[in-house]
Length: 216
Ligand code: SF4
Image 1 (cartoon, rainbow, N blue to C red):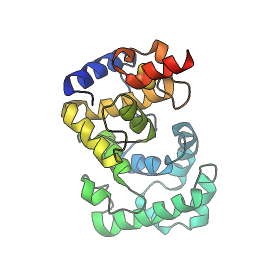
Image 2 (image 1 turned 90 degrees about the vertical axis):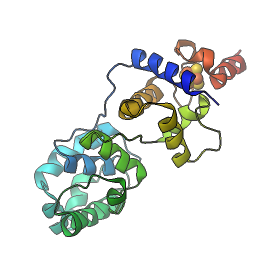
Image 3 (image 1 turned 45 degrees about the vertical axis):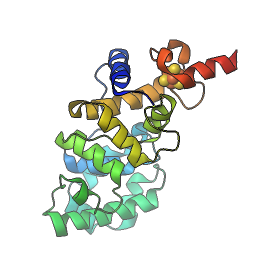
Image 4 (image 1 turned 180 degrees about the vertical axis):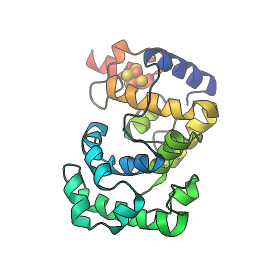
């Protein structure tokens, strides 16, 4: 497993390679971010950003979503995958925000995860990006890179991967590290044909060295 020292060295390289990584979802408030992150499950940030301007004009508050018909929400998000379920979750989530949280987005994991359609990853993204609460969200890019770099074990669960990063990185880096890994996963450490030749982490990456050896 990659040590804490080597993990921190790796992130220093990544911060140089990809400076100022941030989330790409466009949102003007914690509420808008929550909805945008819910929409982004198994969809690209670009596709979500295409639908949210009209969606938030049509439904500017939790109350407007809570009182809307599912069909009217679906009409604005039908280009996004899983839109039937997402419309249902958004409506129920907004009803819960009103009933249980005074119409405000809560700021703890436990409360966020009570909301319909909100899992650990969504809660982490909202806490980090909307409220600056140190949190580390694990998605498919983060999982792949954690295992290739041996930051986590090959059979590690999403929860274990989150714990591994939290143990090896300073709390103040968690949000930035998450966004950096997502861009690194999109641009370099891609699922297929990773750009190991150009990767500054090749010297410490067994998977990358193996990949290059296999390609000859
Ligand atoms: Fe990913 Fe290759 Fe870099 Fe390893 S060397 S982190 S597999 S891009």
